[in-house]
Length: 195
Image (cartoon, rainbow, N blue to C red):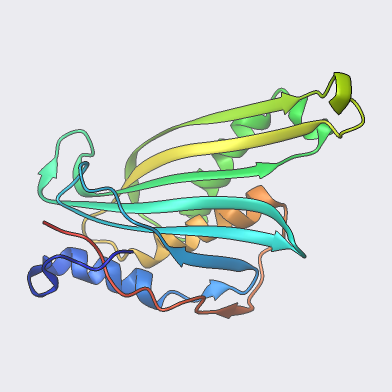
């Protein structure tokens, strides 16, 4: 997250949500870094990027953006909005599964429910792609990917922690790695952006 323009006047609910993000203990297989949050969607925003590596190979990556509008947002049906993008390579067998998109969406909703995150107004898209090489590239492997773009509105009275935990579970699901209890704070996230 970027340095806030006015740290002293961050609204208390947003400051609390940023604190939840700052102190979250990440699975050691997930590398988390700060990301410049968008400045045109909501008055206050915070963002992180994450990747899961298998050796030197990235097996999944994602972004999580937290938006906050003290006045509330009718489209969100609340004051907060979580926005995510997550992607991973999948096997050829998976890409031909006609239910892969439904399964991908259930990874998010099941994670939110199992982590006890209270939410509403969820929306998103699941995109599956398969690239078949030809010509001088014909010796290369076929590449298949799934992309999850989603957003949801956390309950105003809810801690952000269950939502972060659910997002972490989504990353593990899309990467095809089991949940683990080994965790470390990947980096001290310092701040957020506001007006």
